[in-house]
Length: 168
Image (tube, rainbow, N blue to C red; front, side, top):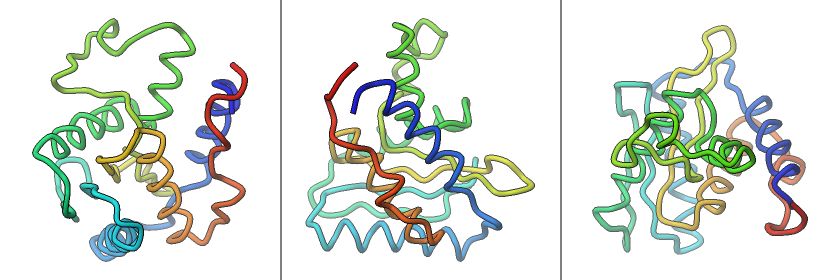
């Protein structure tokens, strides 16, 4: 997929992957689903599900490093600030030839790299984020999207990103 197609696909993901309600049990179910997917595939990832200001689920799987929680924090800060997925924000910036630094955000606190996705609740808006760190950014993003599709009963095959690097 090219940049234009990726932007359109991520925008569709952000519109479709919304919750009718979200509480501590839903956070646990989402985190557990991500953990199961990662364990079954032997992935070394950190998983974080949070309402803004309140951690609800956290897991660091074997092979992760102290850098991964920092990536989680920085990527989830992008979601908190822009109410968009960190991957979508990164793609949007790239399409405009911009960086977060040019928007006044220090790289020590913000990372527009894939892996953090907004938790959008119908009637309430974006209330938090789900974040994965440990894989290449596109894979972090897609693991989150796959888990959200499974939890929300959406068809992942229709929402997943296509092959990377084709077109502009």
